[in-house]
Amino acid sequence: MVFSSNPLALSVPEPAFESWLRDTGYLEIIDQRTSDAADATAATTTINSSPLVPATSFSSKLLTLLSFITLNPFAKLTADDFSSDTPSWSRSFIGSYSSYSFPSSPSQARFRVHENVKRYARNYAYLFVVFFASALYKMPLALVGLISCLALWDFFKFCSDRWGLDQYPVVRQCLLRIAQLATAVILIYSHVQMALFCAMSVSYAGVILHAAFRKLTPAKQSSQVRGG
Image (cartoon, rainbow, N blue to C red; front, top):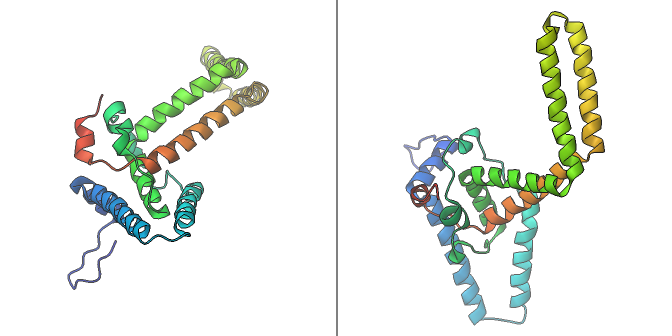
């Protein structure tokens, strides 16, 4: 990111600049002031209201909701976001009633989603595991198929070590292809892909909705309440 309005402008990498904004709390200030400005505009419009105001407000919120479809919540997600401690489920991730508000615009929704996904990446990952386990519980055949695939590959590894198949690359390659074909057949007929699709769909919708409506809270405050 380049600041060219000053003769002494500095070129700052965007990730470093965003990290500085996050550490200094400016991201939360931007989010809060955006919401306050939208509320002030809505209040002024209500005072000078016309018959078209409710329809305009509804259309604005509808456009914001429709913009969720175009969001990529993982655009700024990195592997480092999974290496930090898991934020508190009760105080940080869920928060209170006042921790949520309708995004005032598609840009604010995108801003919140990108930042909250980075902050709560581990929470969302745990939720996906829970949803996938629930889907397997509801689909016993898929659970049996998944366990069968794991057992098949464990048996293949056992046989490879027991018989020294590394010394016979052609035989090992043939058995590997057979195991891959058997795995594909088991996964398809046991509908494991459907359980995975259901878990991914619910998780994706949950990530978008939570991240878009969840206000940004100070990073220092979040770090203090982690582990709850």
